[in-house]
Figure 1 (cartoon, one colour):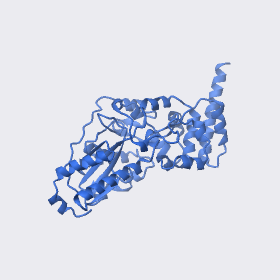
Figure 2 (cartoon, rainbow, N blue to C red):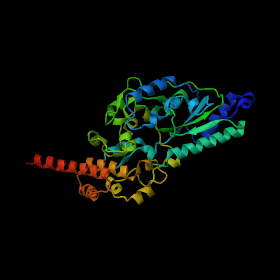
Figure 3 (cartoon, rainbow, N blue to C red):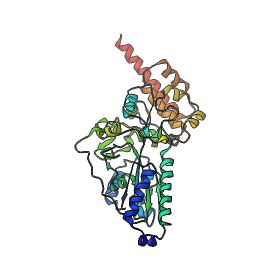
Figure 4 (spheres, rainbow, N blue to C red):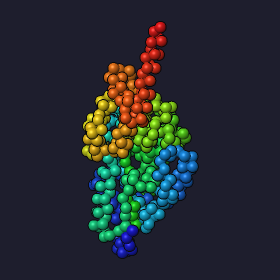
Amino acid sequence: MADTEHIVSGTDMIALKGEVLAWCSELGFQRAGISDIDLKVAEGRLTEWLRRRFHGSMDYMERHGSKRSRPDELVPGTIRVISVRMDYLPEPQENAKRLLDDGASAYISRYALGRDYHKVLRGRLRALARRIEERVGGFGYRVFVDSAPVLEKALAEKAGNGWVGKHTNVIDRETGSWFFLGELYTDLPLTIDVPEQSHCGSCRACIDVCPTDAIVAPYSLDARKCISYLTIENKGAIPVKFRRSIGNRIYGCDDCQLFCPWNKFAKPTAEADFAPRHGLDRAQLTDLFLWSEATWLEKTEGSAIRRIGFERWLRNIAVALGNADSTPAVIAALHTRRNDESPLVAEHVQWAIEQHIEKKTTTENKHV
């Protein structure tokens, strides 16, 4: 971090904070706040979560030790965090609910339908840093967007940007939870905001609606059961016990947000970067399963979906096709990859085919 002593002595931090928040709004952030770096409570929760192995194969969650919960260890000199939010809901959430009921269509988590949010937020935060620099001169900072050991949800809560709900996502009373988070660590002694308090009350909608019972207790998520983890983070086979519960979700899961009462206030974003691309908000499973790797690379360019790779993409769709109605198109699509060169894909395709054989047998027995 830079030496900011000259900045502190010559700058009104209250006034600077007002300018910073105004610039955040101009740059497309729907809300921003300032927090200190005391994350002792969140650190205790993280330690317990890791102890229970709820992070599954996400070894990076424990790799950096206390740097995740102690910002000044990750970036020496940090004393404040500017936490920002950017809305991303691409369409009314009723559309997403209807899609979940259409077993022939692919459900992709709403956050991944448009441009990769890492790039969008990172660029805006860097622009914010440049504006601050123009105002005060050189200062110490570092930008983060879900790409380093940062407790972004705890920081957002401390900055007054919302509270961590029982599903472990951040919720705002006025707009719900369909937003991305980003942070700018800094050595500027900006005035801090009042932390938000929980307003979940006795509601347990997210807990009850979770397809795989991944929310094992209020504010406690076992990622190993979560469909987002199973379809994105998990690199191996999807455990058989979860496959039927996955339904038509081929990349992530939004159920805990879709059925959260606070999201009745959510509105579609005006951010063009988050608009659906290549028809992925209404694509048919059979069409996606027949894509070549070259087509997949073309259609997912600049998308967060790229991170799972083509093999896991096919693995996920195979499971969804196994859960779909037994139509000629579904059966034909599965047989095109029955002997896929990837053992991972072939195993999931075989499972899917067996589901349709089982459905056929059950139907025939009913008519005997």
